[in-house]
Image (cartoon, rainbow, N blue to C red; front, side, top):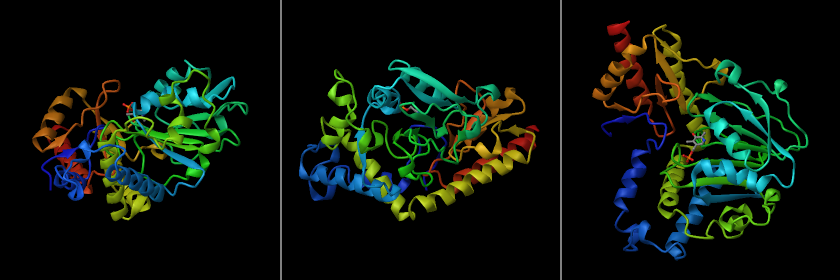
Length: 360
Ligand SMILES: *Cc1c(COP(=O)(O)O)cnc(C)c1O
């Protein structure tokens, strides 16, 4: 067992087994005499790693044929721009649902490429809920509808898929990728940075329906055109090879855990442990509507914010790291991604109980 539990929102904890395997293979991958980092991205060794990673991701998510998987760079933040760049398709506007800080950033970038219609917003209640579909003002002529499936900072998560009819649904999965089954066929495009739930920073995954490719306007740089990336199997230029290799090890680890459905069960169990405790006491508070609570990122406040530093110091002494909330909301945040063992959540709840006893 590792000596700390890392509750960081991202870059975040990775499975211990995966890190050990990467360490063992660091200097000599499968007898090649090279580290994966040193390999030509066009050589047969790396090509096999790349192809296996894609095949495993397709298997885990049951990605239908007719969708391309792209391994890109630039983070989800570049996708905030690259998506409208490629998907506006000459249309006047795109619909965005504003559920928090990451939605807002996506909206800001999209405005550089066209008109943005805010179809719904949770801002009226400080982003503590997901607005119901019946209240959304969707435009049937929109280029696409964008949602953030899990708001990493606010801790609200979609546990349902909006029906957007013929308008392609686009979702930012950065912080909930592979944490629960996703019916890919209901989306036009799914994307996310790897560093929350999949692997090291530097890799961005885009899953895009093929009929949405080829609409980037003239003048789009080739590296930013989904079609040129897809036509070149994400090897238009040097891909983030080591990050893709490590993500591939995580995919294999997920398969050994029983796949995404098994992972979801564990995530339900882990998050329930924490929410049940939070709901049982007035000493701590989570502001999110129970039906919209994130299974990945659990923000909470202490009754008395003056105790925050003491709480964090005590957590650190017990080898629980990175529990400080995002600077925009304050308080605490426990990120409990796939690789966080249930023992970590138990240790946190145990500490929270003791802290309450001492200071409540
Ligand atoms: C972290 C995060 C991002 C930004 O990711 P970068 O890789 O830093 O660009 C975007 N959306 C969500 C939901 C995130 O959690």
